[in-house]
Structures are given as C-alpha cells and as structure tokens.
Length: 113
Image 1 (cartoon, rainbow, N blue to C red):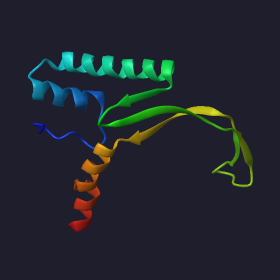
Image 2 (cartoon, rainbow, N blue to C red):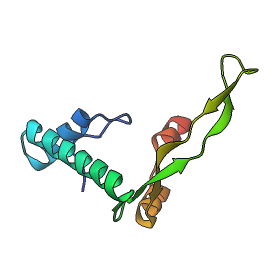
Image 3 (cartoon, rainbow, N blue to C red):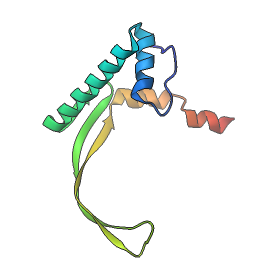
Image 4 (cartoon, rainbow, N blue to C red):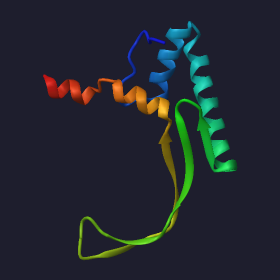
C-alpha cells in the first residue's frame, strides 16, 4: 500500500491520523479514535498477558529489568541505585526485517548527498 503523504520520522498520533484519514477517505477525528482504541487495546493486552504479537510486524513483550548500581552522569564519582522496573522489549518479525533490509533509509540518503 502506498501512502498519499509520507509520515514524518518523529510521528505523533495526529500525523498518523492525517495519513490514515487521507488514505481511507474518512474523517480525521475517526482515524484518531481508531488509533487511540488500537493503542489502548495493545496496552491492555500487554498488561494482561505480558506480550502482544502483531503478525508480520513483531512482538512486544514486558520484561523485568533487575535493579543495579549506576553512576550519576553529572557527578560520576557518585553511585546511584537504579531500582528494578518493567520495560517493553520489541522483536521484529522476519517479514519486517527483510523489508527493512531492502529499504533505503533516510540516513543513507543523507550520507550519499
């Protein structure tokens, strides 16, 4: 599927809703609601099951990061305790990985100029 307007590299929900609204000829408010509902469903699934698999895209998984001792970047001699926390890990699918391998990325475009 080709998009009528490219999505910026730093995308907001509004940027996505504009592209979806134009591509599918629906009101932007409806596209925004669809995006919000999608994100809410993904978050609820992550909280309940600990992972979300989007076939052809990848898997989001909740992982527990261990507590550790770190350094204060402003005062490197000062040690700081970083408590354990939950984080989200993403593993892309083979399909996405192969699509990205053949894609010409923005950084490559800038390097060639």
